[in-house]
Image: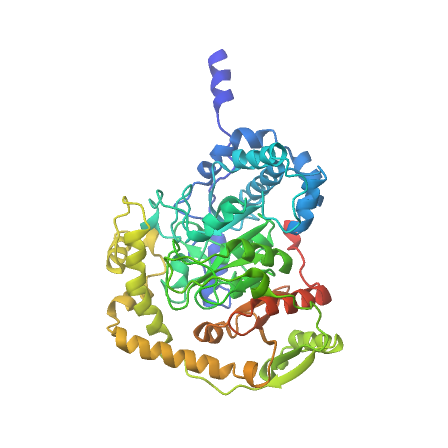
Length: 541
């Protein structure tokens, strides 16, 4: 009896259980969107019980009662409010961290509510949070500034290198990519005192892998789902996990990456704020690439102020990134008046067919903004896929050579294709057509330069009204014009605008001139205060 009791005492709790999803998948084949006709939901690779094992002891004493008491202090709160609660003694960084871990486990272990948004968790994050609490007292920091990222748990898209977790890009080929150095932007987060909570799911290889495959699917993490409509609405991608996790209040904020729409798309479809900054404002070193021409990381948050705070923490010139440039934040962001009155804003006339967009424009006009209707000329996107093909053909091997664990066997696109062919059901159930296209593309570097120049010219021509009319921004919907802004290398900032009758989120996207993020933030903040559109997904409150 003593032996049996001892064994039971040592038995670990088992929160995550696989279940038969056959009926769910069969029903999913009736979805009107081909990309939503999933082949699987649950990851065939990941063991979430193992992911949570390091927190077993700490979470055992963190009860549902404690969780419920903290909900009012944490859910939907911005960084200044959270820091205020810490300053007043109502909240600690330790409890904030445990709250998010408990909440992630609570929902992700429920077969009717899981979102498959988490790939990995930092096993040391609770002890690191305790250190933040101790340091704050020991160093007599006193009242932290409201805009401080100190002690705030942040999630990273799993194509961003960290020294304490694997970096997989969602691919089993990189499952052993464990011993890496922090990406430059992760170093910046740590320098500002942020806590790296974990890694989030994504469209595998940042959605430049397979054609017509679901957004938010990866072989490592399974199928990410939208909390506003599980298996109904798309998550957007490729930063699907970043958008979903923040929409569901699984962390204070997240970092995504974008080549063309990969931040604006999931931000829009999950009702969060997402910035795709000017190329070079943030370092790309230590991030799994698609295109050194167009890639950039960016912050994804529940509010504009949090986005602003997170971006500031990521800033810094990186000598290893040829596009990186240094800025003086005070001058770069300026002292823009955060009101809409007398701001000259361009709207895209064809989009006025959307009733929510039209209603929003009317509200902006009533708030004092000067609205200029524009109808840009058509543009040619010929060569866009070629640009990504050739950039990735050269950029990915450089990453694999310089930034991955030596245990990782693949060192080229061809290596990855061969690796996946060994078990396509597990490693590439939707195919790997885009990778195969990269290998077949014989475009020369000289030809690529001409394509890149022409696409950039086309993009700038489409957005010419920014200069001709001296506009503060051009307003779009979701990621409708993200590709155009991408090739022109113009920043975009998307903010929740409302919800369709179906309940699907819809967002307003501000397109601005290069290096004009400060002006975009001022406009977006004023818009956010005017509309106040974001609502929590009802099943995740």
